[in-house]
Image (cartoon, rainbow over all chains, first blue to last red; front, top):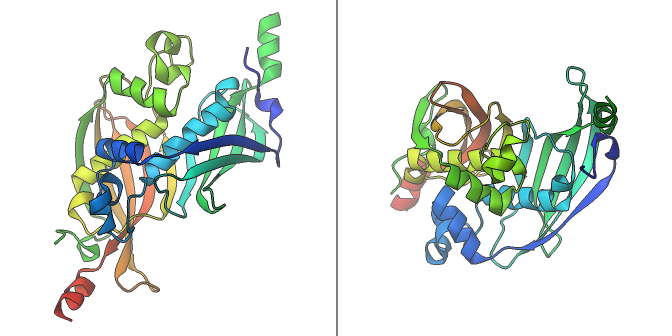
Length: 156
Length: 156
């Protein structure tokens, strides 16, 4: 049984998604696989770019946030996936040695009209570095099973 | 010198970003690092989920698209990064053995008012599987250097 269902999320609720240190090694590894641009790939090449040094691919920061969300609450929830992402803003660079902290704020919740077994939770995620600078914001809507429906199904 | 500058993009232009086969191995590897949910992590666990089998993390598909964009034109362009992503829709699951094809359509272009050295190109990316089903759409705005400004700087 999951610990968190749709009913457990309410507008205004803030969820701590923990902290995570970002290394040069993982920045370069992600870039080599998915985003081979000079500012992500190699320290020396990155110094010659406007970034002035190695910075993480924005998609890497999104992937790191996904892991923080998973560890923060999602793998303990009755998650039924997400239809997409409403917006991502890459506000400041993520550099080797940065310690990121993530939090999610519940913006709205609503039951699905067409699928009574689930509800939607609209979230704003914010990622901060060790200076308190917000490096990324992300708005997305997650689908979660409804506890009452799971309980009904179990009784049937 | 880059081959493509802001001036080389015009509304309506369609850019082929090639094809890419997705393996079970890479789906599980990405999931283990960034999105450890049962439908992404392991074939057997995935069969018990609504996905009915292993599917790629939506963030993995975004990262694969980033690589297709890089190989398609971005690493040959005077890219100056992107401020974020306007929208991602995960429309259909990506499964092991799928061959993805990506294309980008230029929606609008505009010069930056505050930074005369660059311009914005607003793109719609679409990713299709081998059945022609659209599995992902993504709208984002990319920043590119302006050729005329680079040429002026070279003359100065």
